[in-house]
Amino acid sequence: MDKPSFAIQLNELRPPAELDLLLRTIEEIGYRKVTLPDHMDRQAAPQAGVGYIAARTAKTIAGTLVLNNELRHPGLVAREFATLAGLFPDRIDLGVGAGWKSSDLAAAGISFLPARERIDRLAEALEIFSATAAGKHLDFDGRFYQIADLPLPAISAPFAITVGGGGERMLRLAAVYGDTVGINPRLTTGDFTEETIAELTLAAHIAKIEVVRKTAAEHGRSPLLQVRTVLARVGDDARGWLSETAAAFGVDLADALMMPPVLVGSVEELVDKVGRLNAEYGIGEWVLHEDQIESFAPVVAAF
Image (cartoon, rainbow, N blue to C red):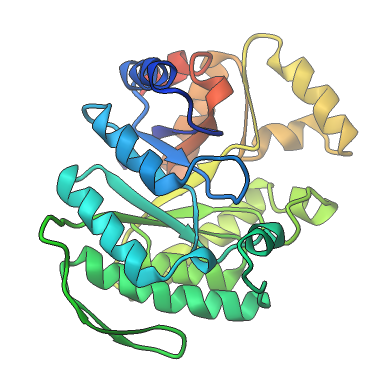
């Protein structure tokens, strides 16, 4: 198993001088990837941000985590990311999801469809993205999307695809199409409920990983497994902080420390945990947030 790597999810973009300094710090520390979310608020348009991040770094992978499939036609998204990959080969990652936040679609004047239909639409979109990433002209006749022999841009190259999932159907889709598969809790409303907390356990992650591995093996694939942290803190006092936080949710400290999305502890404890989960379960990428960039530098350096 390759050594685990780390990514940073930025909350938003900043003025160029400030953003350049931040990106330089991220790259110097050794984070492998920088990603942007996709919500219809004051956040910057993610595709433009991906291009800027790639242009202002030397080796960092730039991507989305994740693009809302419901907001854009996948044929246009495929062309945009093929173009970005042509400009920055091997450094572009299209993270895409079915869209879970109804207010994003309301802001864009788009109907919020039932989850089943949104996932059906994502399945067709992933087929389009996969074909484009493989260098094929877009020629697709589906239930939701139709594309008639749309050529690739003159400047284009393959791009990576990231798909996350909490439910079994999404995990199976991710295993078939994702170069990286995010092992996620199900967030139907965006709020943390008792059900959500139960899905953060190690046992829940193991069960989801088995779904991904089995499906991927059936298709001759071996995607990278990704976990996005929900709690992360480095320091000798981190366990005390986690104990109070866990108690507020009715979770035992020992159980919280076992949760893969909870990276809380000393540098030595976190290096041990990340290394162990990588070796035993194949979790190869950890997504942290921008307020953890410098504090996690010793953990990143250890790998």
